[in-house]
Each structure stands twice: as structure tokens, then as C-alpha cells.
Image (cartoon, rainbow, N blue to C red):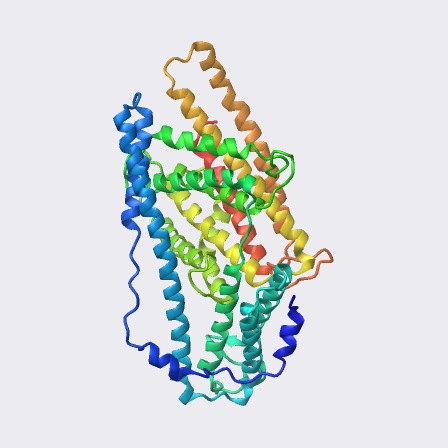
Length: 519
């Protein structure tokens, strides 16, 4: 097995990495050739949505006839074949696009070659990036490297890329500290930035090739969650388009989701032998994604509230939504990014987080702004903060001395989400009880007594969690988190702040639930 140290030793002596064979690449691909056209999946998506709704309607209205079942069987087989063909086509198109992108990088090397010049001030940076790129290219071609060692090595290279960027990048220019007093920007900016972006892309490509295993015993759960997520996304899309959705459909999905959640034992999904199979993180991530979608469906349901236009909230909602969508593209690897870009996007959410922090104490005392208007803004804001958390944690690993603070914040976040899921579950069960027409008088009395107990329990739990969160917030010095010894550690501050902001958004959402909903 090849070790990482062998890869590093091979590339200690660095040579320039401008393309060695641009002529051959120019012969095979013309720079003016049109980009390959991707065929969209909108038609397939529409077919799937239509079939989902038709099947749901069929189950609700009487006993289907044999001819109806045969018709649905044929439609299901046809759409499945269409799906398989589409996925295969996507795989081929991805390979084509990857080749085109690689060719573009090679051609860019050829374009920039006549202008190649790097000032002495940034030559050391160029040489280090060249060495990192060669190590990444070698790692990409090796198959017999231990996966854990490969991951650690990738993290080390990624950390170093962030350090280089943070130490030398000012307003999009590479300016080392030693030459910042001079007005002249060192030459060779395009060369070095090109090399930096290539390194980032190689890290992402290698990370994407690493597959996470889900044990066969968890595959049925994963498939059920995928179906639930698809159904919830369909309902959410219908709500946003103003289409009618049967409330019972959302309730049935939510009950199905809760039944999966109850299968956990001490936060783990076990197999038939009582063992903990691989793939826990993936299942939990999909479970949480489904709960988030239930919540988003809940706040996007048609509202009877008056249409009050709040200019401030409207602006905050648009900013939070656009920023969330951009962060999502980075978090899913659809676009390359840098730590400074994520920091800029996180800063764009600051006005929204200030609104949340300032309005938590006054929730319930004023009904000037409709709940649905607030909820949509905070939901988009929390989504953006969640993606920024993911990116910050990957791009700037936390200092060991701050791990305890991270653990406390993650614990608070999980407690808040569990309380939110409990609140949604109660809301749906309440809707079901009030919709039943044959409920007797004694049950009605019990239903009227129950909300008081539920409300008290909910408020006590939320108050305890909020006190813990406020305690962590109060320990910051000059706006920064400190370690156990009271010292400020710069590494990971943005990640912890983003994580705490997300927790306060969850507190806001839960208080907003209590503000206008009877328990």
C-alpha cells in the first residue's frame, strides 16, 4: 500500500506547472466549440409528481378497480424506465462535462503561457501551490491508499490552502504581508489564482470519489426516507405555487416519518441482531432533512392572516433566500468556493440574525407582523446558516480547545430540533382530533384540558434550553468565543458564531409557534 509520506517526498522539489501539452489539447477541442447541451429532467419530474398525486387520490377514494390498478402498473413501469434512462444519461453527460472542464483548464494554461510572469514576492506561494497540486494529482491516481489516511491528508492540504488564502488574499489579490506597504500589486496574479482554484477543485473531485457505505440492513430505511423527502418536496412545491393540497396527505407523511424516528435506540438505528450498522450519519441526515421539510411545509400552508406588507421583512426574506440558495450550491459541491466567499455570504445574513436576536424578547407582545411572514424569513435564514455551518466546519476545522463549546451548541441545536418536531407532531394530532366528527363529549373535555399541560411542558423545556444558549453567549469576550482558560482562539470563530445564530433562529421559531398557536 502506498503511504501519504511517499507522495509528499516525491514532490518536495517543485517545478512550474504550466501545461506541458497544450498543443495536443488544442487539436482535439476548439475553444469556440459549443458546450454540450444538457437535457433537463423537468418532464420526468412532472410525470413523477402527477403519478404521485394520482396514486394518493386513488388510495383515498374507494376501492380501485382491477383495470385502474393495471393502468397504474403500466404508468409506474414506464416512468421507472424513463427514470433509469435519465439517470444513465446524466452519468454520461457528467463525464462529458468533466472532460470539457479539464480541457478548459488545459487551454487556459495555453492562453496564459505567453504572459507567464510571477514577481519574486509571490514565487514562494506559487511554488507551494504547485507542490500541493502535484501531490493531489498523484493521490487522485492511486487506488491503494488507506481511506482514513487519504481523508486526513486531504484535510491537511485543504487547511493549508485556506491558510494561504487567509494570509495573502486582500480584495481578491495575492499580496503577501511583506509587500503590503508598497502600492504596487505583485505581478502573476492570474497564474497564482489559477493554481489555487485548481487545487481546490482537485480536493473536491477526490472527496466526491469517496463513497460512504450504508449497510444493507439500513437500506429499507434509506429508501423510505428518500420517498418521504420526495413527497414532501412535491407538497412544498405545490404550496409555493398556490396549488391545493389535502392536509391529510401531509399528516400521513409526517406520521410515517415519526414512526421511523421512533425506531432509534439511544440515537442509533439497530439491525435485527442489535448491532449498530454502518451508515448512521446518512440516515440521520436524511431524517433531519425530512423533518426540516415538514416544518417548511407547515409554515408555507395557506394562511388566513391579512396580507400585511412589511418592507423590512420582505428585504430580509429575499436576502436570506438568495444567500441560502448560493450557500446550498457550494455545500453540495455544485460550485467551487473559498473561505472568504463563505464569510462574505455569512455576513449577508447578519441583518437577519440581528432581527431574530432583537425580537425574541418581544414575541407575543405585538401582532403587527403576520406569523407566516416572520416564519418564512427565519426559515430561509436558518437554512442559510445551516449550510454556512457545514462549509465553515469543512474549510476551517475547529481548534481542539474549542471542541467543548461546539459540543454544547450542537447539543442545544439537537434539543431544539427535537422540541420543534414534537411541536409539529402535536399540531397535526390536534388537527386530526378537531376534524373528527364523531368525537364524544368526554373526549372533547379531555382535548380541552390537554393543551394546558402541553403548553407548560413545552415552555419549561424551551426556557431551559434558551438559558443554556444564553449562558454560552454571555461567556464570549469582545464578541468572540473563548476556550476553557478564557483565551480567544481565532480558528473556528465564524463556524461557532454561525452555529449559535442557527440555534437562536430555532428558539425564535419555537417561540413563534407558542405565540399564535393554541397548545
